[in-house]
Image 1 (cartoon, rainbow, N blue to C red):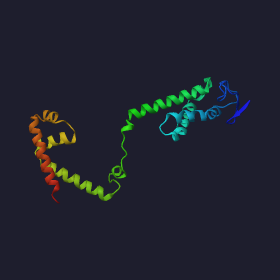
Image 2 (cartoon, helix red, strand yellow):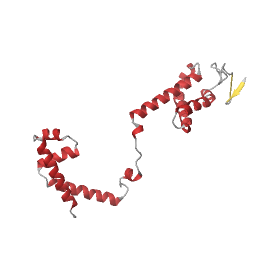
Image 3 (cartoon, rainbow, N blue to C red):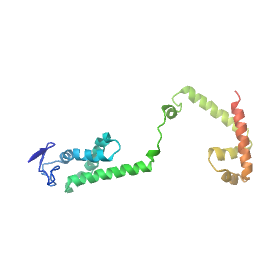
Length: 190
């Protein structure tokens, strides 16, 4: 008999890991430890960063331990663990694809903060918002509604014009004039 990872068991025919018939005194944790190197090498070959392999091994362990008493039905621990590892990689790939992780861009701390930690920046932002609100009040109701529908709510010119009951060209003129007026008013020193 060979001793591996603190457990006693027989080697299987291929000489890899314990045989599928495990002694009754063997706990699930002992089985998991016996296959740690197998899982680690499995993940090293399949993940982008081999240094993450150990994290994936731990995730497989969590999945197996979460099964509870159902693990007593497992006949081939090696096959079971490799199947769990494969499912883990498939799940990771699906999550990554759904979140479009390859398209993510790292944002600098300046962009992430947005000045919210700076009381002065918060005060300036409130003043600018108040000035914009006051400037919007000077626009005609149709021009204000056209501006808000297109620039704030994101409607197309055609949809905003239909909602207001005016032609698309008229809506575009209202928006152009509104932008020019707002820019002029906001550029004036208070």
